Amino acid sequence: MQETGNRRLEDITTDQRDPLSFAVAARDARVEDMVDAALRHRHVALAFQPIVPAGNPANVAFYEGLIRIYDETGRFIPAGDFIHAVEQTEIGRRIDTVALDLGLRELARRPDLRLAINMSARSIGYPPWMRILRKRLMGDPTVGERLILEITESSAMLIPELVTSFMSDMRRHGIGFALDDFGAGYTSFRYLRNFLFDVLKIDGQFIQGVATNADNQVLSSALIAIAQQMDMLTIAEQVENAADAKWLVEAGVDCLQGYYFAAPTVHPPWEETKRATGT
Image (cartoon, rainbow, N blue to C red; front, side, top):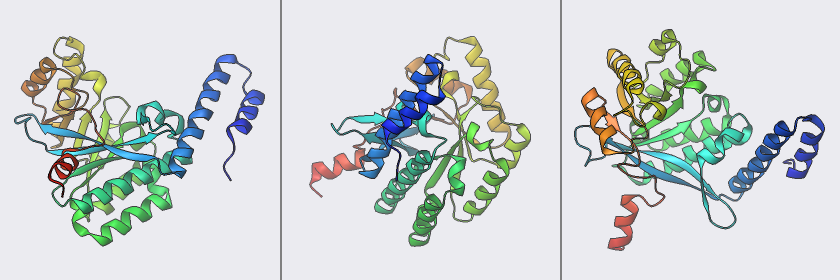
């Protein structure tokens, strides 16, 4: 049985004497309760954001499926508002499992869709997550060929040997892998060579304002060069204006993602088309 929020707050009061620590822990306890309730009641959805080719941004290379939960009022809550409070807990593993399930169901429904789904390296050892993945791969072999699993740089470095073994196993099913938030962590380049990711996603902190920020230009150029040297596709995250997009294209990035092109939406284009045609 799940602990109640009141019980956890009692524990926090006992264990945390510093007022700031208490406030942070109390906030996280409330967030955990909210996310736990949303998962139990299946108040979840995927929001889809397009990733576009640098040379032809009018087209879509593939989509990223981003988990959203909604509260009892129906208000959607982005992952950024809760993921840091739960990512190291079992709730984080349950979120990964739900996101994977929703993404694989969408891939099964739409044979023309290619989709990236976020995961933590910790979920590799979580049986429900692995069961969902293997079940869907057995049910439809084409799903693996259209699935990209995104693993954050910090998560991959926690258990690099397990991640490389998992990637080797899943590549037999055609699954691609993206290293998310590249540049934000402390990846050993020895491990980066061993991982052999297909895609490197450059962390948004280096992308925002890159057209006018000399430091970000140097860092982004270096990250693009690393990816090119290792024959990996590069994606710039959090592209929010035309000037940054132009600079990135000229710098040699392969794909772009961000609000300048489209915000994540729980009503993707194929759903809008379906509603418009009544099919």
